[in-house]
Length: 123
Image 1 (spheres, one colour):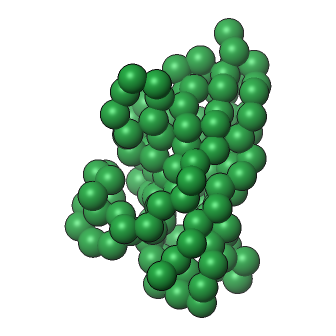
Image 2: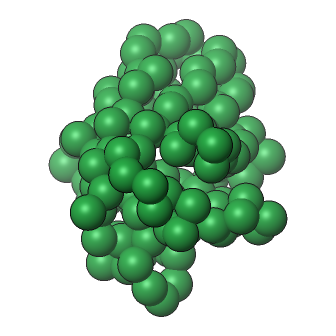
């Protein structure tokens, strides 16, 4: 069992930056690849970024590539999402999740989820 708690969301102007954190409970954090997803009102949850267990490889949605950076600190049981050059279309609830198996890009591949943190980007 892994419990995930996101933090760091808020209101920011377009072009600004935010860093999201996701703190995990348990001693098995380093055995999970981790991902970030987001869900805007009226839209389906979509993949944002993922990172392998060691942090050696990262994956991004095309819409955030070059602007967002995922990282992790296994000693702190925490995964981060640095978001730069934010756009109004980045407005959503952001979720972190622990990967179970399969492709990183779809939500059914993840079996533990946080409660989400709201990110709002004003124009």
